[in-house]
Each structure stands twice: as C-alpha cells, then as structure tokens.
Image (cartoon, rainbow, N blue to C red; front, side, top):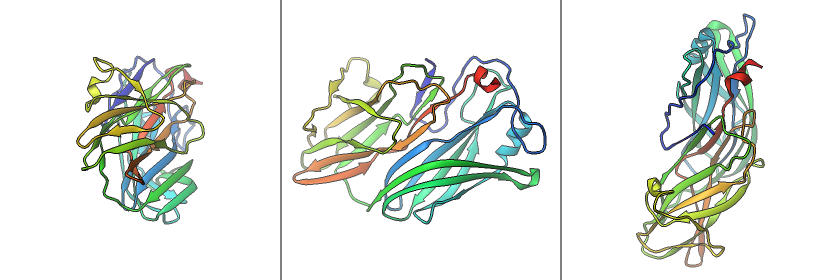
Length: 288
C-alpha cells in the first residue's frame, strides 16, 4: 500500500505512474480529470479558523493553469462560518510530470455555536477563461464556546494520502499533555462521519509520535478512561475499522471532539488540526 502520513500541510507523494489523459474545461472536448471533495465533520470552538482541503488531479496543462488561477466561493454556509481565505497550490507529486495536482486550502472561521449540518456547494470559477465548476459537499460542524483547557494537544499526524488497498485500517494519531494542576481522565473521542467507524482506540506511554512503533508498545484504551497526571503526556491512536479505502471511496476530513474529565466536570476540546484520509486514483483509473 502506497500511503503517505504527514504532520505538515504541504507534502510530496512520489508514485510510479504512466502517461494518462487530459482534463476538463468547458470550451474544448474534455478528457479525464477529477476533484476529490471530502465528507467533513469539524468540531471547533467559537472564532476558531479551520482548514478543509479539496483536490484536483489531471494531466492537461491548460486546465491546470486555468484552475490554478481560479476563485472559489461557497454557497450554503448560512452564517455559521465565514470563508476567510483560499490557497491554491500543488501539494501532491507523481513521478510522471504529465500528472498534475492542485490543492484548494479552504480556511473557515467559525461564527455561530451549535450543530450545523449543511449540503454546501463549492464554486470554482475562472471568468476570464469561461470556466465554471460546481462541487457538492456534506459538511457537519459542531461549535462550542471558547474555553481554557487543562488538556493540550501537542502534536498529530494530520493527513493520510495514497492509493491504499482493499484491507486498510487508517489511524489518527495525536499526542496529549495534562498542563493543569489536577489529574484528568480522557474519556474518548466523538465525530459524525457515517462511512468511517472506529475499530479500537489505543495509547502509548510517550510524548513523541516518532517513538510509536519502535520501542514503545501500544496498550488498549481503558474503558473507564485514560488517566493523565499533571505534566504527563501520552500518544493516542484511533484505529478506524478495516475496509476498502481505494479510490473512488470519498475522502474524509475530521476534526475530532476529545472528551475529558477533571473532577466531576466533563469538557471537550478539538483536535489540533483536521485529520484527513484521501484515497487518490491510480493512473489506470484516470484513464477510465
């Protein structure tokens, strides 16, 4: 399985590929290109800025340049979030220079508390080139008041991208630390993406993601919760159920809701960043 896990926003994925067809633009005969739009659940706090990514993959240099110089707008936010900015850049790289990719980094500011479930429309437009593309997406946002937390998310792996395989169990891995003065108990995680289920949760006695899988052994997350003493750190691994994650399975973008307890009070904190699972097409699939 060719899968890249990364803690950075910009990544380079080197994959052996073959020459494939060109892209889609309105004023000449289209060949194959694709947009990858994730099913999304975002937990956040008021005034947070969150990131959602949309990907384009194709082989036509003309379409690449048109999309690279396009604008993106969103219909359906209904005031619960504001589009802060959009960045367009190449973040995935195949060996074959004929295959091009562009990533739309969509930054949203959360404006309104509550649970907001929306079917939104992303409009990618280049008026000069008469290019107009509409993409549908299901977004679920849960927004809570801004709080000071005694639990801190110190690091995470935010992106898994690749060809994947038939029997894959993606993992969301993040490090936590008790920065308060009292012990706390991590109770678990919550999210709402129907086609992505948790298989198990484990933890490692470490503050460093790089130590996972080396000398540090995983332990099953306790049913009663995971105790953290003041200044203590752990790495938590959410193992999603094994399944077929090959393209055309849709990408998923999740900012987990992490529940923890101090004394008799239960709190929730967002994951540091949005975690993504992005199955990309093989060259053969782009030819179909």
